[in-house]
Length: 147
Image 1 (tube, rainbow, N blue to C red):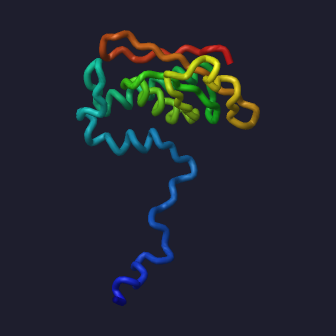
Image 2 (cartoon, helix red, strand yellow; image 1 turned 90 degrees about the vertical axis):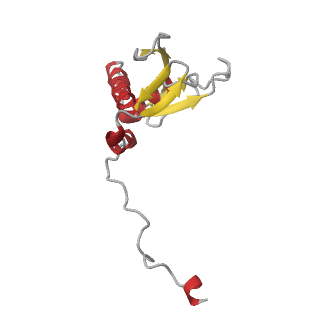
Image 3 (cartoon, rainbow, N blue to C red; image 1 turned 60 degrees about the vertical axis):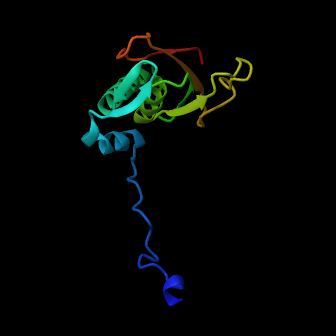
């Protein structure tokens, strides 16, 4: 009975170390999967995507967000179908320090919160349209819509 109610040996210590002050989840995830770079990370109707391809395309997406003038801590609205484009855009946004807001594709323009959500500090929500040709390996191309 004493063994059941005895505190664990780690009592008083945190269960895990706190993340570093400048923690980036996408960078962390990419590092965790470096050892399985050529393994399949995602399967969709266009085929398979490896962990290295996912990381590469997410970094490209982050670069395009930066080029479009979307800054860290701003939000982007991702209204996308269930394909590899979604994790690419989501992780790319995180990698860029941008907050991705994922919305259901069945929302109507009237119910899509493009203007009503703010990111704090007066920053607005950017709607990023992502399109990718049907053939595999083409990176998604975000375009900046009106704020």
